[in-house]
Amino acid sequence: MGKRVGLEVSLAVSEAVKLARVDAIAAYPITPQTHIVEELAQMVADGDLDAEFIMVESEHSAMSACCGTAAVGARTYTATSSQGLALMHEMLFIASGLRLPIVMTIANRALSAPLSIWGDQSDVMAERDCGWVQLFAETGQEAFDLTLCTFKIAEDARVLTPAILNIDGFTLSHVVEPLELESQEDVDAFLPAYLPQVILDPGKPVTIGPVGFPEIYTEIKKQQDMALIGAYDVVLEVFDRFEKKFGRAYKPVESYKAEDAEILINIAGAVAGTARIAVDQMRGEGKKVGIIRPRLWRPYPFEDMRKAVKGAKAVAVVDRSLSFGGPGGPIASELRSCLYPLAEKPAVAGFIAGLGGRDITIEDFYTIVAEAEKVLDTGYTDEYKMIGVRE
Image 1 (cartoon, one colour):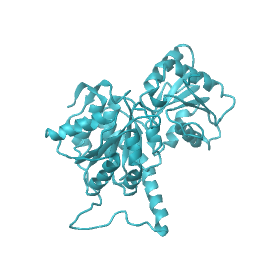
Image 2 (tube, rainbow, N blue to C red):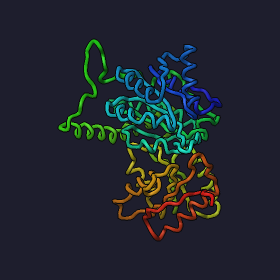
Image 3 (cartoon, rainbow, N blue to C red):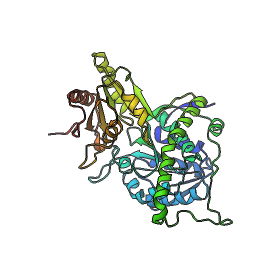
Image 4 (tube, helix red, strand yellow):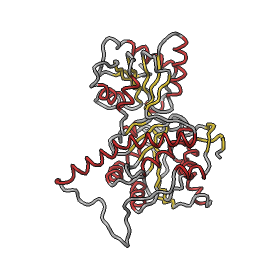
């Protein structure tokens, strides 16, 4: 039997990691991720969590250590943000290429320069092609629940791929919310002990990740990609089992008042809560507006997204990162790619907002919807609009 508590979301993630009975944690502190690993370090020091906490000199070292612990069969966890994730860049590809089911929380934060400690999604979008399963949480409850789900997805024998759970820095990571924390007994039933497929063992030495000659490299990458694509079915299974066990349902793409919507707002993360308030107000004014929120980012949920936008006249995609020199933001460009094969599809309008932690207000969503209405007759557009830019 679980318990209902008021808890900072970062600490709720720590509780979920503890309940997952991780064996090894390697992390380096960086704002706004630090509370997660500070709490885990305290749990280990107090004897409340039977795990090895590896203190390292950088985020590159943290991911290197995680690769080592995962390779010997340990359930492994880390967390980071922003420049820390960028410093991990080299090792992210090694972790996925070696099929090591490491779980990582990213408290999303803007990349420098200029220096910013505030939240946007530029850090994870810079790593979208690193070969990891990637999900977004909107609320503290989702952050807790999806942490448990992410371990189960990553460690599934059909997947064996590292996984990222994104939570918004500060606007989610540092807020206190009422949460349902599940019991250790129930979590154990949902997430049993990890059974590694291949491990490094001095008694039975093997080699992992040797030289990939041109004759085999392409086939290895194809196999890796097929495993990541195949993770979609495992995600559905895990969400279904989680709902049956704990009563809370999750989908790869969530919708809000989207059934009859003419204009849909597409946004990932905690800011969807503000969008929901704006949509309620606009609905009261007679505007048929709704929300679609991607929870699963990799593998990309093509069919879910196509179904979610069906019947809409326009989709206003709000990106909180910028693809410099490209078509605006990554979420918008991927939606355009997803919808391209369809004969009938909504117009797609791209917007950049919330960079460097700037607030996205209810009034901003009114502006976004008004601008989206202008493209109803033009269809696809490669242009994007920056919201809230000061003249």
